[in-house]
Length: 318
Image 1 (tube, rainbow, N blue to C red):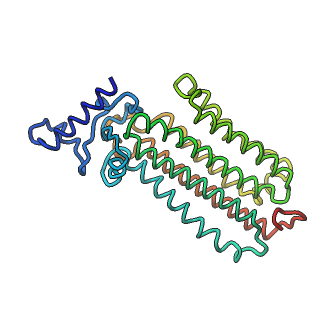
Image 2 (image 1 turned 90 degrees about the vertical axis):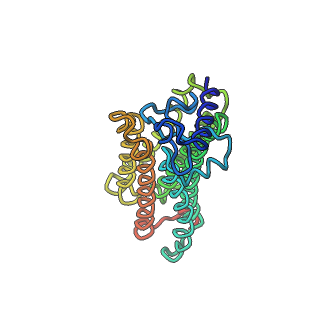
Image 3 (image 1 turned 180 degrees about the vertical axis):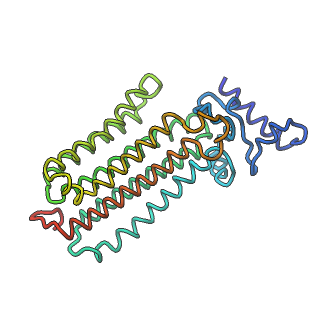
């Protein structure tokens, strides 16, 4: 049935290009900037995800080149692609913009200081890059969509791990044992989550809840070092040395993004109104970018405080 929908949708697109005036207006309206767009009902089952997004779907192309060319067209994945494509480029450029002057900003900057920031920026670049690639190639074919969906989740897990590594580093600036323990916990949970996301055994609807639980568990593991830090140093001091207020704001943004993602608001209220602009997934993408920026600001703020106010007997690299 899915293959029949794919063929019929593609054939309809070809017909609309060659005989645009001979077809009903509803079909002509699906052509936009050279891209033939289809309604939800005309795309294959594996491509159908959100029934409240009624139109603007690119036909199955079986061509990476065609998918990439659609970057210039107007369709319902345009914002999803570019919001994270530009974010990936921005965080990649930030590697040079932030890391290069680090030694001028702080005296005695260590290799660890460079590495932690570089890891976070690289995981952010990877996460947003994988996301942009997934939304670009989502209409390529069922096989390619499935591969990039897994990589999309891998990117999310990498960003979680990179965020925790940087937050733990500044929060336990002088406490090497705590850093080692929590980095090990974060890395272990991240590795398990990635394994579950990519292993063929755990694919399909049967394992969907299990996959979600592993991802959520990895995310919630960040509560442990925060609670430990508050217990050890007190909330006011932990807020200063770790950038905690920024991480709480980041968590709030992620919570809002998750609610919007899960409820599919606002398109669930007015189906067909937010097909191209303003859908829940687009809002989710933009909030995630801002949340990641907030985390980066928190880490850099913590660097400032720790370098100016904390002297460690055995700080890594010093």
